[in-house]
Length: 173
Image (cartoon, rainbow, N blue to C red; front, side):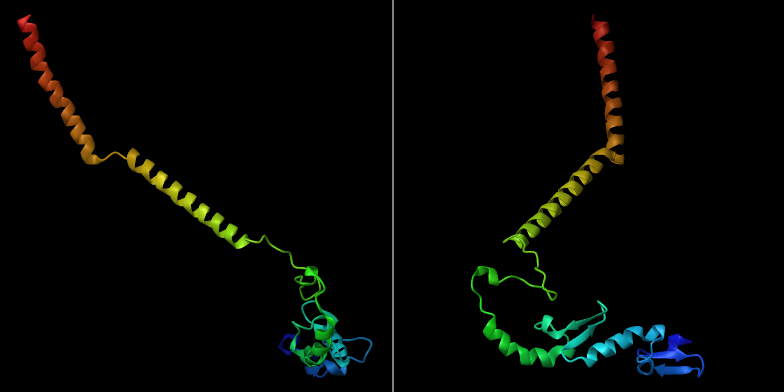
């Protein structure tokens, strides 16, 4: 029943149709489907704030300027010139990588890409070498049908050739 209502609406059992959540936001007991919508609506009513659906929090636009959502574009555009005059690097530590929430990004090694690709190449080389050795071992172990018959026939011919010689030597002696 209530699943057919779009976002910002809820299913009213009494009238049996979808109603807007905006009607119940002012009431103390809100419909379960409208709680997030009402918090979002209250957040949008305050200038300079927006509702982050992922965090389910009301955030200030000033905290996310630079990588701001579309709701904050007006405030971040008016605030940007003022911030450019204030933020001047004093030393090398001023150029640190910040994420959206203000925490620092971990810095990698200076040549981390080179190390990763070198390790990947080494692993690939070891894999190919291992497969080659395994193939060689399998090829040496499997008997060839033509080779086994030839070796058996050569062995019998050698024995036949030796038998008359052995008899001839014994007759001479």
